[in-house]
Structure formats: structure tokens, C-alpha cells
Image (cartoon, one colour):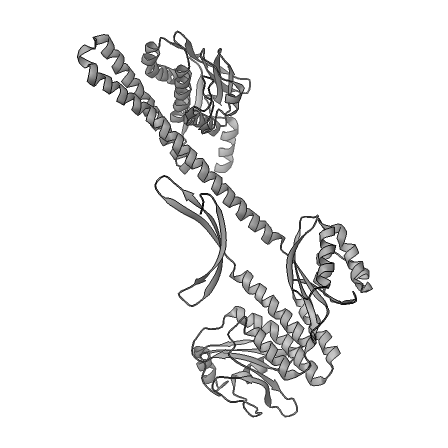
Length: 595
């Protein structure tokens, strides 16, 4: 796998308590200096997978109901579909006969117990579900409690996991659907109960239709229950283009007037929705293609208003012949938005890692420079010490001191930058006499200025004070003065001046008569990058940390920093800082909080 290459896949996570989670993993490989890291995000898609599977089971049951006339065969197909979602090795359906008061069992699959004869089963758990008309998840402790209350008794083999849901039609219960596991506890969850309960009403409708031999009427009831209870928009069209059925959600998603729905013509519906689609030609082409196909299909539709629909289509088949198609539409706009956010996060992570690699490479270069200076100077001293004059020794010592000063400044900047990235650098603004602070910086720089024969001065009115964090302001002035001296020729001048602006801030200027900068340099001046150096050549590696810290610290004080420069004529850095007394607006905020 290549560095920065994105990877996405799905895995199953087997939890120690027996639960299985579907996880979607996305990430990329990052090569660092000493180790390789795989940075990944994972998202739990178990519910989505489960939802998709449940939808497919509902479609299968719809298909079974519309194509199967035999009750026993229908119940067998329903059982096979349920087993795709929940454990259903032991499954039976008990129907209540109102005339006899007994339960009979039109469908029975069990590992141990034979199919019972019709019986009232008054103290069975099945009868308890029938009486309550509510789904029931039974565990051993609850069974014992109901047994002590004389509500139930043991009927058949003992099962530690048992779930029963009523088969309801409107306000009446016609029977019970039961699933059980003879070996394990906690096999079924509340989610399973809810799913089975939603399927229970559909099963009940199918059974009632078969029992009453009113297939057409009961099929319509069944279809309506399913269609109106789903979050999907459903459209069923026969092979002649006649609309068989739609639900309310379909009309809501596509904002179709009832008059057009009532037309019952698929071409009329298509004509209405085309103006809403971003790619209408692709839509019509795909529709025509699928009407001549027996394949299932899943794709996405993009609407002009920004919504995204997931479209699922499956053929309606009877006696091996296609009689039309069922179309399902689901609004997945929010899900797609979340996926896009994850994609953007991965991209940002990749870019961040690339910037880190570049950063560390440049830092290594900048650290190497002063160390090389030390090595070169010490080599000279080791080889030529006896022949060196006192003046030459003083020059060597001064050069070594300058290298040490540069190295110390770089390490200080690195430390401060690290604290910024962690968000741990303190910010304690106080009133500061600006002239005294500038004199402190100049005092440290004056010896280096003498060695380069550079004049350094300042023009700071004594009465000017600023309201700032002392360490940050000291870093800004020190870095800008050091930078100015670095690029000022022998015999040049560096000066620090200040004035009070019209908006009651203090503007500080650090001016030099050095080599100046091009427009390209000015555009990339406050970036950590390999950029044009101030001698005009391309590609000089530099961290830019000193200037970047200046920008960060000035902005921390709600100030701004700018540069004016001409090649060969020098540069001037200007930055603003609050005046010596605490700003009134900040005092006002504090007073409001205190109040």
C-alpha cells in the first residue's frame, strides 16, 4: 500500500458477549521517519445493514403474498425470509379458532416437539401473548415470575430464549408467531421483537386472506399496510405501464399531486419528475432498460434541490414470467452528507500528514546548519589553533556564539510552536512599557550588530505602553529584529519605531536596509514551506517558524501584521498591538459576565 493511499472496506466485529457488528473502515497509510502508521476511522453500519436486510425480507414477503395462493407454501416462504434476519430454526404459527376457542397450528417446525393437536392451551406462553395482544420476549426469570402468578405453565420442551408476537388484524388478534432457541439465553433482542411485530401484522393479513378465500381484497389490505408503514416511497407498475400501487411516501418524496397519482399512468409520473432530476436523460434511459430486464437494481438519483434518493427496483414475477416491477425510493441525503464529511476528513488527514513530512524535513535542515557551523569552527580550531592570532580566535569565538544564538532561537521557536499546536501556551496580557522591552531586545542583539558592522537603533516615545502578553511580544520583536539583521548588508541599518494609530492601537515597525523581497516571497512569507529566500534564489529550505510565530502571536492580540519591501531596498514589518490600557470593549464584556 502506498503512502497516503486511501482504503475503504467492511469487516465484522465479533463482540465478547456474542453480538456481531458490521463496521465500515476507511483510512490511509502514513510513512513517518521512524515508523509507519495506518490512520483509520470506523463507522458502525450494523443498523444500516440490518435495515437493508429487513427491507429485502419485506420485499420477499410481498412477493410471496402476491404470487402464492397456498397457505402452507406461503408460511414456509415467510419462515425462510425471517430466518435471514433472526434465529428461526424453531418456528410455529398458532391460529385461534373463535368457534372452538382452541389453537391449531397451520405451520410447525421444531427440533424436539411434534406438532400438537388443537388445544385451548390456556396456561401456555402462546395463549398469554394471544390474550395480551402484545409482543412478548420471554426469559427464564420472567417465565418463573409468571408461573408463580399462575399466568403460565410449562408446555412442551423448555427453551431459554422464546419470543412471541401477536398476529393482529386491525384491533383483533387471530393468532401468534413464535420463535425459540432451546440452548442459549438472550438470543433475541428488543430490535428483533419490533421487527417480528411489524412482520406479524403482515403475516396475519396474508393468513386471513387465504382463510377467507378473498385473495384480491386481502392482498390489497396487506399491500396497504406494508406500503404505508415504510419510510420508503413505493411504486408498483405492471408490464403495460399501468400503476398498480403507490404509497403516500412516494408522493411525498417526489411532491406529486394526487391528480397525477390517480391517473395511474407511469409515463405521466415520469414526465412530472423529470424536471426535478439533475440527470433526467440517464433516469429515463435506466427506467426503460430495467422494464426489459428481470434483474434487481440499486442506484442513486440526484435532484436539483440537493437531495439524493436511493432507488431499488425488483421485478414482479409470476409463474416465471415478469408481470411488472416494484420501485422503492429512499431519501439518503443526510447519509450521503455524512459520508462526504468522512471523505473530506480523510483528505485533510492525508494533507496534514504530507505537511508534517515536509515540516520535519525542513526542521532537520535548519537544525543541521548551526551544527555544521560548530563542526567547521571546531575543526579550524583543532587544526590551526597554534597559528591563530588573538583576533582570529576572537572571530572564531564570536562565530561560534552566533551559531549558538541561532540554534537557541530556533529551538525556542520550536518549543513555542509546539505549545501553540497543543493549545497549551499561556496568554497573560499586562501593561508593558514598550521602550524598555525594545531596549531589552536591542541589548541582546547589539553585539551581533557590531560584528556585522550594522547600526541598530530605536525610536520609541517614552509614554507609549501596550497591553500584551510579555513573552509573546518579546518573541515577535526579537524574531523580526533578528530576521532584519540577518538580511542586512555590512554597513546597513535596522531600526525599531512605534506610533499610536487613529484607532487607539500601537503600530510597531521594524525596518531594515537589507536585500528586500520579491512579490512571490511576500505572498508566501508566513508559511512553513520551502520557499524563495531573500537573496532571490529559488528553493532555499526554511521553516519560516519565526515569522509564523509572529503572525500567530500578533493575531492572538487581535492585531494585524503586514510587510512592505522592494528588492535591493530593504523591508519593513508593521504590526499592531493594543494600547497600554485594557480595551474598553473587553472591560465591558468582563463586566457583563461579572453582573
